[in-house]
Length: 294
Image (cartoon, rainbow, N blue to C red; front, side, top):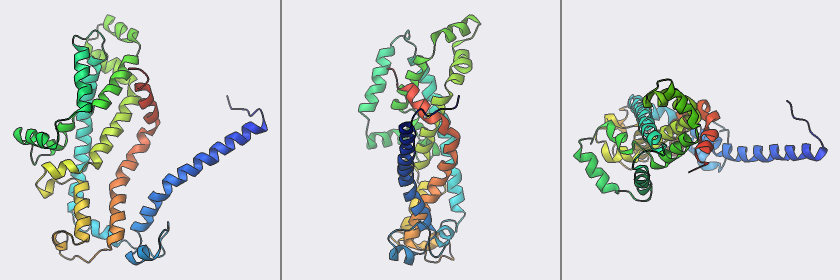
């Protein structure tokens, strides 16, 4: 039923809310528009004008430099592979551990939950983690970017809480109909968990896509660099801080240093922005549903 306004004050209040929210939405959008505009501007304009959204002279030199070599497409493929496979692994391990822990009759449940919470408060540290990755033979392997962070303890607890809130009668009815535990999880629990699964799919995917530190630690071969590491290398090369510019392209021409930084941000951000609208409708609902109860 369409909403009816009962008074002038109600109309004014809603108008104020719209203007207020639109103002803050604009505040969050302007920095990104500045980055896009700056990536299309010349270095001279970036130095001369402190702030602008539309450049006076459009230049694609920064993007030409970034895409001057086929290496970036290979790195983008590596990032897509790590993001897709890593997210699937994250969801598989998170769901298969969260579902048993959501069962109050599970033997040793409290002990296991305490162990999970312990990992949130304390971790092994950088060097022990590196030694473990090296000992199991994952150095210079893309699996080193996936398996060490296969489960996020915080996300696991949220998903576990969500599973606990589902009506127990649904599971009992499925077992009466002959479903096994795997069948209950696959046919009952997962279809009802689309909001929380979509939410943490986005969380895990963004984490894998943006991560470059793990690759710096574990990946030695340049052909296995994910996009974020390659973009970092491009920025450093453009500033002349490391190596030789001709490593990327023998016909190299000095790129604009300021606009290339902004172009790198655009190239790294746009793929995730494309994915987000497909999951946005589940985003807030999934987080809230899983965080109501403990």
